[in-house]
Image (tube, rainbow, N blue to C red; front, side, top):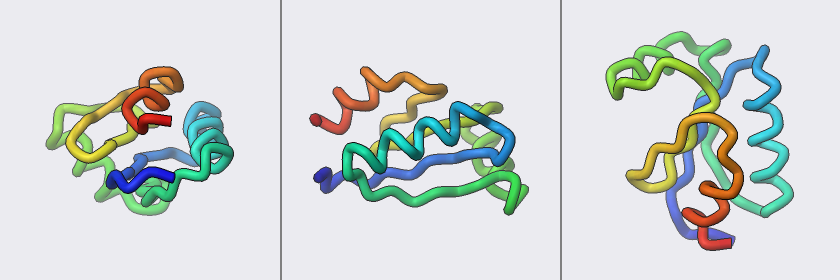
Length: 78
């Protein structure tokens, strides 16, 4: 299990967001989810960081856009 801070930004209609959450669960990664469907302010947070699509995962200070599972796994050191 990782001790890193993991936050994902997701969207209800995004299959990639669902797949990302499922994979993190399989890996046993604890994460905070910010769903832009439930709270549009989360979208504004992303836009202020220059990100305009979901899913996005922040692992500590590293931002990974999309469903880049190999890169995410490497960053999580699992």
